[in-house]
Amino acid sequence: MRPSEWFAKTLFGRTLLFIALVVASGAVALAVIARYYAGVAAERAYDQLLSGAAIQVAENLYVQGGVLALNPPVAAFATLSSYDIVYYKVVDSRGIVVAGYSDLTSRAALSEAQQGPVFQNGQYQHQRVRIATVARYMPEEAVPGWAVITVAQTTHARAQLTNEMSFKVWTLIVLMSLLAIGASGLAIKRGLRPLAQIEAIIAARDTADLRPVAVDTPSEINAIIGAINTLMQRLAQRMTSMQRFIADAAHQMRTPLARLDAQIELLGADIDSNSNANSNAAHARERLDALRRTCTDVGRLTGQLLNHAMVIHRSEIVALQPLELNALVKEVLGRAIPLADERDVAVAFRSDAAQTLIFGDAISLGEALSNVLHNALLHGGADDIDVSVSSTKTSVELTIRDNGRGIPQSQWDTVLLPFVSLQQDGSERSISRGTGSGSGSGLGLAIVSEVMKAHGGGIRFSFPAAGGFALTLNFRPYVSSSA
Image (cartoon, rainbow, N blue to C red; front, side, top):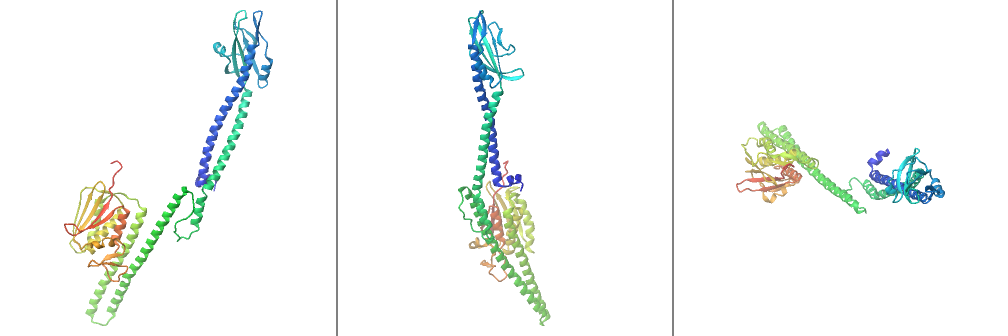
């Protein structure tokens, strides 16, 4: 892995890179500040020397015969010239240069120079110089007035001192930055050690071992451990549910297949017998009808098994979307009515709104509604079905009422379990334990229950005062963000 990929793809690399960038940014800011203050410190130090030299020149002025003269302060000039080149100029009260370099100029005002040394930057003889200007009152001159003293020094020593001070501070900043980044790397590596421990524990486990992860970790990682353990628990529950479902499904498939095999054997025996031909034909037709019914049961059971697995799968991966319920119900009604065969079935649909929007999955809901109508038509014997949709600000209810036999109130919770169905007399039975031909596979309402759980809704059974049996599905309405 290249260094750039390592920094981008590893938590250690990302964290260390972020810390390094922060430290580097701080180091650059500190270096700039250090450079500024080093320059200020060097400027103040050399300005003190330059100010002392200008004052000494002023103190060494004297008047002889009414004319201003200077006794140069050699010691002061020697101190300054040991670092840089020094220039000076003395102007008497008449504005005549009496000593020094006549072309050395200063922009300092006389009123400011009278208060003390005035500093400024300038150029002299093609070099950068620092200029100090001070004024002294000379009453002994022929024309009493202020003498102006100007002393200039090149800035090489100042720049050298600034660089030396900056280099020392920069070296300290670099060392401290490297120390901070190194210490951060060690701290991150130590902080990530519990994650590596968790990784080793999970990697060493068998695929069937879904026990909670038990490891002593810092409190900040407890949330990760909790999430992993919750996932383990959900996986264990899902695997247990799927194993139970597969076992039940295998048993349920064996029962109709055994019946199918028996019917085929009986049909073959009737055809091969030497009994009366007419009797054989009648028995053959009966066996054939039984065979058709068994094949239908197998097909229906297989379809419901697949649908049950489908709605469970979709509930985990498909996000609910805004869905128009009225159109979906009409479409399902159009597909379900032919299930009544030759019976004359009256169907009514009504809704309190032209459009009813809910959060839902059209495929899963369509399968659930089909199963409700299938139970009413084929197992409930209904021939009058009334479907209504009512909505409020907080809920949407879809009610399917029929005039069939209905479900006894004592069995309302039981019939929502997989592979549980009712005999024609209303007594409960489990097909997984039954051997005869039942009235259904026991998966229809279980599919409806799974779909409603995925939609955050519920199922309610009732015997309306108007008669018949009713099943109500409750949904949460869709409310647009602009509403």
